[in-house]
Image (cartoon, rainbow over all chains, first blue to last red; front, side, top):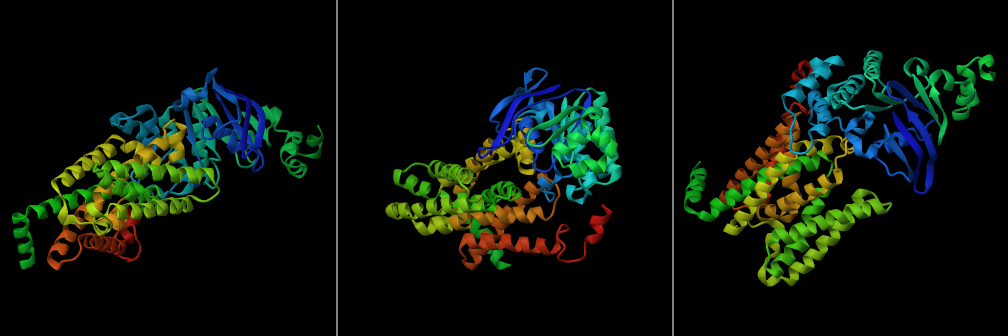
Length: 246
Length: 285
């Protein structure tokens, strides 16, 4: 369980959000939704220690998260990467073993086997020796999910993993997330739209410069909360008038 | 081919030529390796900047009679820190910050070199003077060569991940800043060695051109490093030969050979689509 307390993050003195408190339970897939600029990415960057926080704590099972970076895997947005880099698919997956290896130890046979096994699980065995720029967006996203697999982390954070990818890739990634859930991992997914929210996630965090609502999807995914985070128009499209007033 | 025979005869006879060739090849190899990381990190301008920014350190080292590695690395790292400081603490873009800092260091270097004129020659620092390489210079280059190889072997995976995916590296707790400054330090060492063969002005060519050539031929970082080292070494060898037989300045000769190898790769490499003969190989792989 990942617990966030009193978290405040500010860019140039303008707070993105103030005093955020939210919990991500283990063995659940938690979605984070909200309009652009709501602070979704900022929240996960704060959890990952990629940005400075003004105040607040992030703890995993009551231990400060700073002390357990190696137990968190991060699947970032693909657009941030240089796809011309001289690296093949297998080598990318093997970088997931670097954290546990530490300095001065290089990946060996065991790490290579684990990486090949992860690639097989995402259905990309035959692409192991392709340069990464030769893959489609969906295939590439599966590669980064495979890397998260070999990290053997307890917490997996994915930033908009389903943007611009094909349906088979989306299904393959969802299957991996469900396997992680069964293994008791804490899974956090920043989601870019409202599609499939109810089928993909167990828990939902709705953000708009702070937490609008958080909890089991059935309780949180309501017209009232979506109106608060997005707009009344959007809520009206997604819910019948009867549901919306309930 | 008489010139080739003459070259080898001279090589057998003259120690200074052997020293020159050995130094040039070592510089070619290590600048190819470090240059690979420089271009993959999109730091070509930074490489140029650091290689120029060592000039005041070189001048001060001459004045005080200390090893130029110490003076140069001090100013190289100082420049890297200052560039980072200006870039993070002001609204100007990183390349602007690089331009401001390195030109200031370079200018200071010129003035200091002029003050130290009696013991050194500005022309040699700017354009290299490979035939004047002393035994101490070879030793310095050999030490730097060893440092470069050990650094890259020991931190290969850290250099790989911080070049390819620095955000990911930070999420698992790697100190990417430390790796960056360590690379800058090693870069200043390489620059100091390369001063002798190609001079300050052309150091950047030795860093970038062999690495860029290697980049066009492979999709594997390890192979790229070996290939870049090879291109650097061959450029140095052939450049030295041309320098000897045609009486060209050694630095420009070496750099032109490297540029020629790049041009050929640009035309014929499988990654590059300038000439249409290879498309087939890539699509079936």
